[in-house]
Length: 582
Image (tube, rainbow, N blue to C red; front, side, top):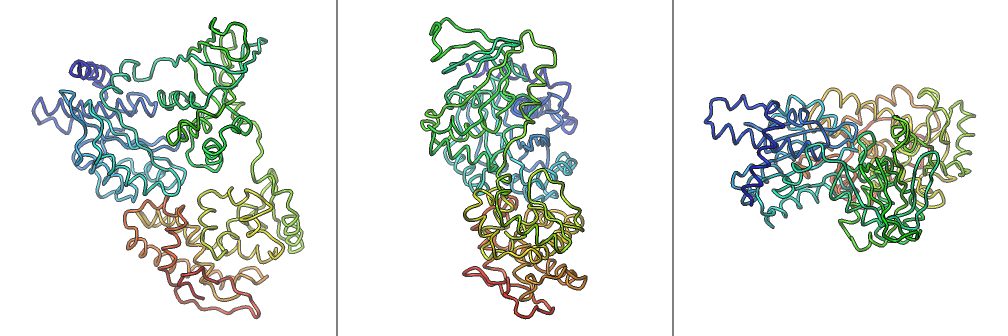
């Protein structure tokens, strides 16, 4: 039946994408070549449109297939969800076989070149959108989906899967930035059966320990098995989520906490998680289970999750690691029926459930007496320090806030792991105000005036790196963006002995010294990276403490000049194995 399936897939591509796919670059080729080209590009657009949930026209405009595409047949960046989709497609007329290893190797090579902004290796269709792609690469929160699609029936060969895993695992250390999705003939046939935009999601939901709200509108509440939610996401992907909320954000500190609970303490998940809110067009209770409230079975027509995208994403990720553990977890859920509600009711539910105030880790810092001590010391110096959530941040000239203070203290520590964490997820540094790492950064030995001076130095480094971002491109620009905390860490440890510990504001001459040192450190780090990690994605590398330590070990401070403060304790103590010196 594979030829019949391929014919039906082809008919859908012809119907939907014939007006949009550009094949003018192959106008002089044979009919067979033009047809193959159209179908390959249409296949890439079909898969992208479905997975990214974008219109056929937008999907077609994302096609980059052609001479010099460097293995990328379609490229699309979704700035709201912060997801970059990279597609390679292969049309097989007979519906047999799979992807060739060489084809996937081309994709992986193009992927690496894209990560390092080597635009000279791509065709005009890709370089013309380099502005949006730069935005994606510059954003450390960007997630990347490698989408491999072909009309063959066979799965990818073992050696191909290993090639992909080697590259993806390297980039995903220590946080998951890249995922891979493979669509073959059966998946494509299912997509065309639903239609590109997808039929309404109709689900039978087993709701445990359920209750009901009847007035003024119908709603149900209870809990479902987490593995069921994982199965929903595996089948429907981001179509399960309402188009006007965020997709799952990947490896944030909150999501990592959700993931840890699912894998290590699944029985506790119901108690720790706020759960999911879903809108449904209609809900009907099935006779099965009768009047029992222990479990009810409900037919849900046109279900969309409007709150809990991060929970859904973390559940899906946990299920891919250990489905049995996830099956032990229960997820709180609300099902709100839109039947007989005002026209804008669904939009209001979506907006309000995603904008309620919540308690963040930062809020607990208000309980730390050391923060209030620092605020008082700085107030006597005429400097405003804001550490409580909700307080109005001061102007940069008159003071600073907790974020700047945390970054400065993290970069000042001897161990590079703290600077890496400030880059990777700063909230982790506030996990518990009673123990490390928080107590390493903020304790009774920290002086308010010294903290203010350190913040001023960090600002000078940031300003210098910002100028570098503006004036450079490619890997230099990526280093200035993603390596800012690491470079700040090195600069602070290369300054003359006692430079940071002074209580006086930074003078113009001192600012000039810091700026010159920043440029020298930047150049040295760039050289080391090109030697040690020439193809590494810098957004990932600078979130990896072990790799940053390796770069630091190979680094030697450039010479500096400047006076030192008498009796300064020095902030340049190196980590074991480091070549840093003052």
